[in-house]
Length: 74
Image (cartoon, rainbow, N blue to C red; front, side, top):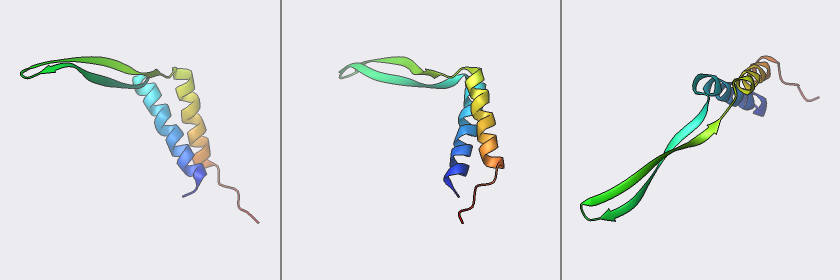
């Protein structure tokens, strides 16, 4: 499997994620106080948004990389 196919698959996956969820997000949990039975934590949603136009471009670019045959070295 060549680098072109791997890059194509990655672009397709990122494009689908960008269109389905609008970006990549995760929850960061931090413990503020941990004193015996008392534990206070905070949860903050972090991540980055990917505009739908960029998601479409990534998806199309990934499909093109997967469909176009790789060049053969002579």
